[in-house]
Image (cartoon, rainbow, N blue to C red):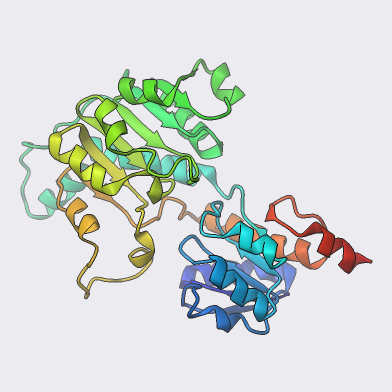
Length: 341
């Protein structure tokens, strides 16, 4: 199937081309993100393949439909950047990757937590300058601490298991649906309010929806223990960044580890080392010694990239062969049935 791949980095092309030996799609790679300015590049293609920071809002969807695109293939799990009402209106289909390597993100979340707690990033820089002093590097035993995990799908479930079985933490969980695996482990499901008040560490592993947007806002921060550690490897919009700065300044938030940021599309995945960062909120966050920010790399393992490439191209193949796709976010089944007939 003739497919244009937006937001292509060298590693994307490497893994997609390797996986494509099985499917033999006609892939065309471009570096720009999908936006209203670049949507015309999809002219003549049946499918577009996009990532987390590509824009697929109503104007972009309309333009894609106008140039003949039939499928949006997401090479990620989240689809909050896709306007599904516009997709339905213009009779497009959207497929995603429900799970690529949940271990990659769960393990990275623990790595962020431990790096922040034991000040490993600061110690590394000190030693490079021949400074071996320990002042300011004290952490705490994670053993026995209460960790609240918000969102217990595949990633959150693995993170909770690591914390419970590996560190002997008291784990609290919050989700719309209880995960039987965690209940069996003796992990308690509680209200978000109780989780915020009781946790020494809070980990966010839930999707970004209208209900979870700014889940951690000023009101939520006020309910936390003094010095709570917050870790977010899910979606940047879960945290109100301005409120978080206030929480860091007053000490309610003792440390913050984020691999995502609510305005990251203007920053992440690009080398901006020769430019001035114009986002004042992001710039302020980087000034705190107890804040650790990475650029959306939690998913970035060999296993995850292989699974992403394989599943993305398989989703395109399934659409091309007119079969029902279990990974569809939205699909105009009437149109597909008409094509079969």
